[in-house]
Amino acid sequence: MPKVVITGGAGFIGSNLAEAMVNSGWAVTAIDDLSFGSLNNLESIKKDSNFQFVKSDICQSGALDDACKDTQCLVHLAAYKIPRYGGALKTLNINNDGTRAALECASKYGLKFILASTSDVYGKNANPPFKEGDNLVLGPPFIRRWAYAVSKAFDEQLAMAYYDERELPIVILRFFGSYGPHNHRTWWGGPQAVFIEQALQNHSLSVHGDGRQTRSFCYVSDTVRGIKSAIETDRAIGEIINIGSINEISIEELARKVIVLADSKSEIEFIAYEQFGGRYEDVRNRVPDLAKAKRLLRFEPKISLDQGLTRTIEWHKRFARMSD
Image 1 (spheres, rainbow, N blue to C red):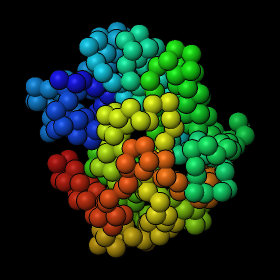
Image 2: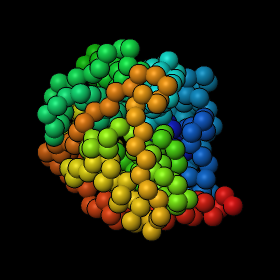
Image 3: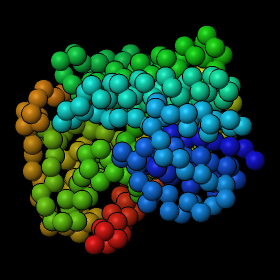
Image 4: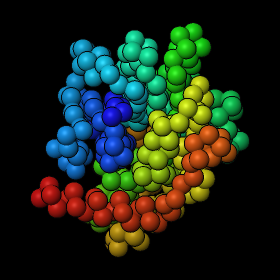
């Protein structure tokens, strides 16, 4: 039976991927320190004989090394996200130290290595849709929001160095706005998660900036199909590939859509970036070119934004009921 190890396996994407891989006949070991992940996300597979969960920091014990023995693939999803309200040092250290540890383990055992990267690395590039070979235009170091993009850009360079110099079979996936069940219900989970939580409580929806910045959102089952394809095919080895949706929407439009779909009485509150307690900088547009994903991974998103948001809202409602 093929086996895959998933770091960050109790988190949003990791838990959805673990479930999909177990259901596809893979043995799965999920490693997570539970700083942001949750065992509740693994409820559907936690008793499956082909699933194992290990609570561990991948940098501070031999748990990752033990898990990677007799394994075919290591999917590295564990990461610290955009320091919107502080914590740039933690973002930089956790992401770089974790990726280095994961790459060393994959190199030791000769595993295929899937690195989760982010659309944030395209930064201030003003020419979407973004192709994988486009320039990465990042902001200055005194704007802390760029710590995440810088850390992921470094991780990509590090992975490519292992591919070039150690012949490690790597695939780098840049995710664009993945969302759905198991997403963290704070800004850690993205704007749609916060909007849904606020809408279900009839609170004002916190739109940062003028709300005219655009994003594309990809339902998690589509994201997982892209990762699964990268695991199971060798066509993408040594490549960087966008995974997302080409359908753009402004953040204000997203907020209004959530209000309607959640049948909420909420209104929108615009919050200036200056209120973040420090320098912050946003990007105006973010949408991927998916030609490479279609060619190498046969990837194309299937779930519309309305379908995905409706399913995600229902999950948020169930979570609230379980918490009561």
